[in-house]
Length: 146
Image (tube, rainbow, N blue to C red):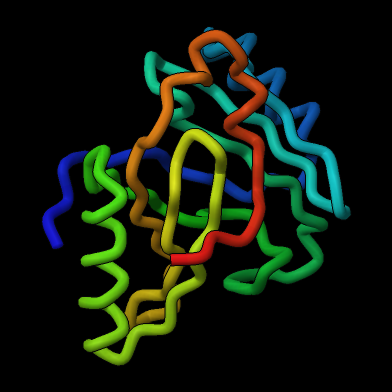
């Protein structure tokens, strides 16, 4: 597997509206899409890619490290544009004993897995630039059969 670039970072925040105001008002970023389904709320920001930063709302009930604690949710790395690259990455990860969760985000196809310290990692391939006309498409989440 060869990583081509850093794709995006997802941060867990306790107040999505407050965080949006900070990233738009203070840092001058623009929200390009939102997700509010199945008890999950997210905002996506673009700096030229389909998204470079996403904010994921959590309760903040856990002091540190848990799913509901504020902080890093995951880091994503781009493998390129070929679905074959993702299939190869899946085979390599599984051969190394790593469990993967294949996910279809419409404009990207992804594998989610944990590193040895439990940090969530995403590797993905870009398969469509439809987000340029319809930015909301980046908020798609469904299972991916590889």
